[in-house]
Image 1 (cartoon, helix red, strand yellow):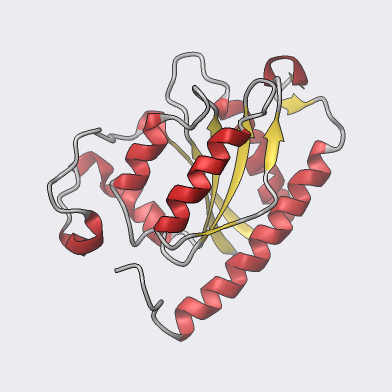
Image 2 (image 1 turned 90 degrees about the horizontal axis):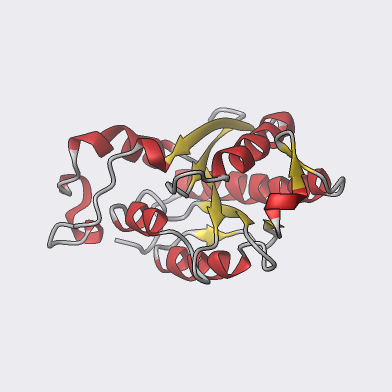
Length: 199
């Protein structure tokens, strides 16, 4: 087992003029500085993720699930990941359709793996989006990390690719420490025995 866990940072927004890549780049930088992760940033704007789904759910189809050819690399990255960090905005009190489509095209790729959240938005900082994502990912047997990172009023709270709040780096460190702990614990558990559920 490698010392470094594979962390996939997901840029959830595909909207024109989105701020997600800025937040994701900053968070990915903190994850690389942490030292416990091999970090890969996945931008959903670069992926082929149709909204129309096959009749049979991926839970039952397994490896035979008929995903588009353009999704093959993305699916492989999700499958190989030990942990996820989702960067999401808040749209109309919830998260973007692009994230829901990504989640729904997959199932076992999330199972028994930890997921942390970094959100941004208006006054709520994207927290409503995270609450909804926690419910969805728990249904897929993922383990959501309690301490997230939220950026209220991001349009005035960032400058030159970094948050103006000096405490943000400390909050990011706490999030990453919790994520690293769960990542290691779940890697060991998955290696020791098959997860008893989710399929």
